[in-house]
Amino acid sequence: SQKIEQNSEALNIQEGKTATLTCNYTNYSPAYLQWYRQDPGRGPVFLLLIRENEKEKRKERLKVTFDTTLKQSLFHITASQPADSATYLCALAPSGTYKYIFGTGTRLKVLA
Amino acid sequence: DGGITQSPKYLFRKEGQNVTLSCEQNLNHDAMYWYRQDPGQGLRLIYYSQIVNDFQKGDIAEGYSVSREKKESFPLTVTSAQKNPTAFYLCASSMGGTSGNNEQFFGPGTRLTVL
Image (cartoon, rainbow over all chains, first blue to last red; front, side, top):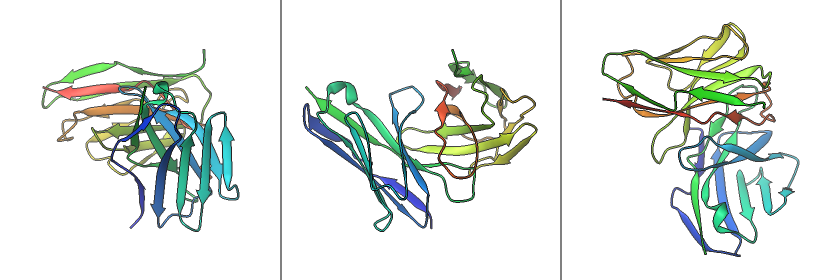
């Protein structure tokens, strides 16, 4: 069956450290993978998109990798800050469809 | 300001009632989506529309209905047939296409509670 999985356990890290979140998928072959941030009671906000032929994408303190062999994307926040505390969702669109499939999200808490 | 709006922010429904959630966008996006989010769960797709006067069922369409009479509007009706409608509802829009390379813009959400 097709699945997109993120670690459902919350991730607590100390301020200044690098946070790494994982997104694994099975039985999909997406050309793109996206990451979103969601704060409590609000809609998700788009952060980054990575293409299948890109190994890595960076935006300020954010870095995303995409390994189509492992069927995995890693999302890194360097020099993390308490303001980075939120739930982070990964999403993909199966080839040839208009639908987006979202993971369940991982809640990140950065401790001051 | 360009964006996507949802109303109301909070909605209370009695059992057996139909309610309609509003979603409007002024981003000139072709595609619009409705998702449902339950505590500790990801977003589940209810309906989506790629073009005016056309829409498709998502993974959990039972008990819901939509219309797309205008490009900027995609209202969702939660009918009495939806047995467990209490949830957070999110509307989104994107430029459309099948390749998945278009970011989705989300509204602020509507929290529906059945009394």
